[in-house]
Image (cartoon, rainbow over all chains, first blue to last red; front, side):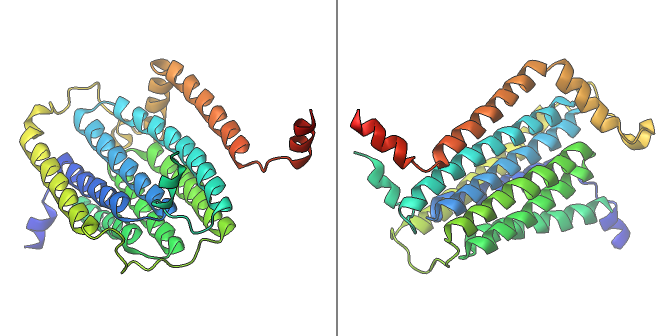
Length: 108
Length: 185
């Protein structure tokens, strides 16, 4: 029985399904949570899910460009986190304990 | 063995991801995020993407999560949020329905469209166990990055500089002396 289990091959479909699950958890998090920092972390989860599927498809297709683009995604994610956290710091410094609902007051 | 690694790393990823969503303390959520990011790094190693695994640990776990924790500590917003209160009545059931629906749609697309992906149609990824060169993955990414995508690489450098300068401007406190002298003119 254990030999049969060990003989199971992990294909790229498994990785893609895992990435889909990770993406959906992140998406539900963005919709449910109201703390802007936690919403930001959920966006990171979604970006990681996309990275995982890029790498899975790169090794499935035998194409290194899938791994190169993940590096670009990581750099852009880092830039996005820096700017987003800057904005969050600017808002929360003025009004501590602001939630995502309070930011609707930004509109005129 | 491959299956064992995949199952353990997938458990890490999913437990961490659920932890980010359901933990009510921001610091706990950030630590759950670390668990997820390490799980993804393990999955990268399992797929022979050694360079990306290293970058994942350094950039995500090392820089981004530390930045999150820094902001949590700096602002003192590390108080727990009561998750039992539901501000908008139908929000959570609706979010669950949308999440499960999207997951079902994606899995259907993956299973149905699996044949559309032509396996091995690319130029091939060099495997360190076959080439005998432990750096073959880094070399291959470097050849692709600095050969075909060097312009995008330079643009990304510009993007990083702009992001850093923008953040410095955003987070700078307004200078009182300059503001008052500007008002006098």
